[in-house]
Length: 473
Image (cartoon, rainbow, N blue to C red; front, side, top):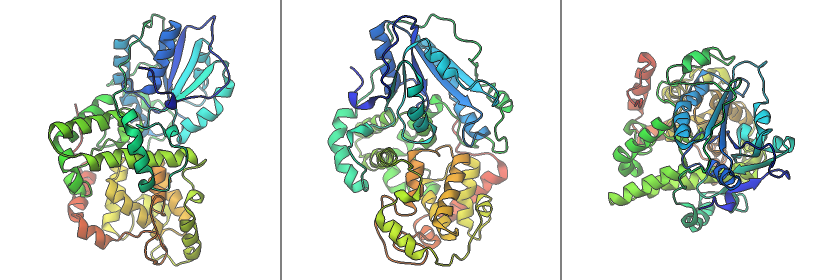
């Protein structure tokens, strides 16, 4: 079955290359996987129609914003899984590791010279958004962006939604048409050409650290103590979540000490697994075991796709000028409220506050590259409370996410940060600094969750450097 037309955007007027075309080129920018990838499927559709093989191009450059050992390690750890799967399917694979700024930065354009068409990921944030705005006009062949990040294609919604309560009924109406497995990848013509060795880097599970040590990136931020990149680990995490946690997710998800969440956000962000296959797996498992997965599916679909909707319909999804009018009004009214205490960005980065619980959340970010979802709300609210201005609070949250979070630089990141200032929320009772924006307190966290168990867990993680919740194959 063909990829749904709603997922596909043609971003330049050029046609397919005829004479001289050797392949259809798929550029994996954000969805770094093979299976359940509509963009790759669309490239295969084109290749099969033109009787051409597929070349899968993936890259990692030393010059991307926030480049460091943590982010680079997670990406490279996924490469062996991708290479193995592509070889099975008969698809060519080039992984270009640009280690130093003086090395070529135009490999995509070189590969496109022999491509009948270029297909890539339609992603509304970070560098993929910028690439998809700038690259197509520089190519002389068709350039298609395909949405494989959302279950319901973002283009199926015609406007920016105000909140979960407005987008939820629209998604429910559309889901039956899209909540179905993606077709398997089947190429008519297998890859037979020699790969361009000047650009291709062979990456194994054993040489990732050695390769990253040769890259000019920030080596001060080490790999996550908890998460290992790649599809195999994503699939294992999903299986463990279904077996151990899905049934108790509804009542335990906001209790960090229970470890009832999926922990799949890093893998969803880097595209090692798709939201579609996670949703289908959860739906099937719950049906087979006769319980409801509604709460998990609402989080995965409604709230995640609300974030993508926000990113799609605003030019800069991370900026506070995109907050609703009521948020802007209350911030203006309380801009000069005294902040006591008031911490610098460096103090916050180094977990140097008076709040033991908040310090633990920041340390979790520094060590794991992720904060438990419920506590991340508290983490962000306190940064708002303790920063000189609302803008500096947002800058601090984004700066930490950009460098340390494995699920940062994502529509969910931007929506989550701005939620701390009222995005996708409603007005609450007036109070200093926050005005009508929702407030969260340490007392509330203590009342609702086992804060001491969490603090002790993060303290042990910091002391030992070993995470008992790390998932290994």
